[in-house]
Image (cartoon, rainbow, N blue to C red; front, side, top):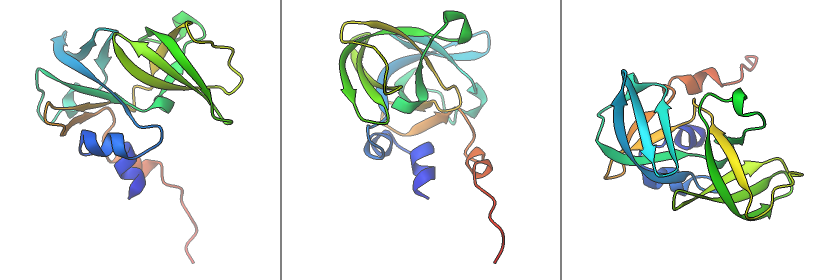
Amino acid sequence: MAQILYGYPDTQFVAEFIGSPAMNTVPVTLDEADGDVVAVHDGFELSLPTPDLFTDRPDSGTFGVRPEDISLVRNVGDAAQTFEAEVSVTEPLGESLLLHCNLGGDDIQVKAAPRSTIEPGDRVELTVDEDRLHVFDPVGDAVNHSSPRGAASEERVNTPEA
């Protein structure tokens, strides 16, 4: 049950409360372009992969993505959608390096490989796992998860019956 709450939070409060570090959340406007829903922020414009999963699409809201669901782009041509952020602090965690970044005036956190040679002041090219994006309406209720909730059951490990 906790993994469902982590992967498909019903509210922005739950999204930010469960997990360490917390889910990144930034304000966005939601535009439509060629049948796609586009999350627009001062630091990025991302087409959301499943516009049909919106329960109700507001004009604005909050975009959410967990730090482990943001990746450094090694080769710019490798990722479909990328954006830049400036690293303000690096925090070694042992199993990873947590990057605190400035993205269009908002702070986000990104988990990188533990031996990354990234320093404060560096600009990094980032991409997101398009199966792990979330949108919350202005009051904080989830209105879109980029993969359907039933997808979580596909991640279960089959165990032999006793």
